[in-house]
Length: 289
Image (tube, rainbow, N blue to C red; front, side):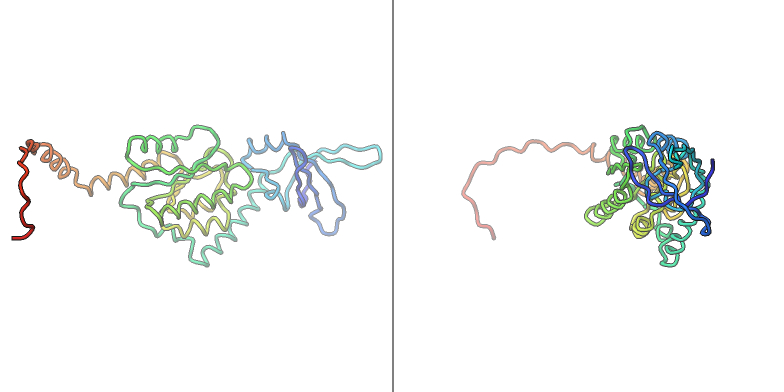
């Protein structure tokens, strides 16, 4: 059975959630308690990319419910599924409000106005802490091993509760790196999971907007505000690598490789100094004539 209801007070129950469902129509009365099992939570997350954190499902939703009649006439409801469109519509409305606020405060285009870096020496990488292989992360790690860049890796468990706070801490670390050392670019790889609502958080977006170095990101499985706010956003890891390689290529051009090669040859051709003969020790003379 499909029910349109307002979800209130989601609470943890073992590995699942208990929900209070209120009617959307104010003229109707009644309250229904429903249980969402941990197994179904994981199935929905894997299939739809929706992170069913308790705070993310408050509000109006269309749910699929199963009912069991108890001996005293009460009904027990079990959630059999969510209709994804309700999530996406609600989140799009939330994102529009956040973007309007960013634009009103002249923050939406701050990252866009930053120039492309003239060099790529130090990269701050925010990567998924999920134990999986990620092409972008692997490629940047290889660049680091070869000595082309200095890579500062900051793993984030995007799919875990508290990931917004972890992301804000990561960007705080990036700012510290810029202020106390040097930093050329921040790269955000959300991985292949369902980490996208965190990347639309208002406070996080304001933090990213004022970062004094470009933020480069790859689109997650669903649209986020970071996609539009970042300095550059790409669909595939190869596109990010091509962008970063362009900075390295420009750095080589400005370095005038032909001149540097000539200098290296001249230095190698200079004869090594011969060993000086020992001079006899004598009475030291005056320091000044």
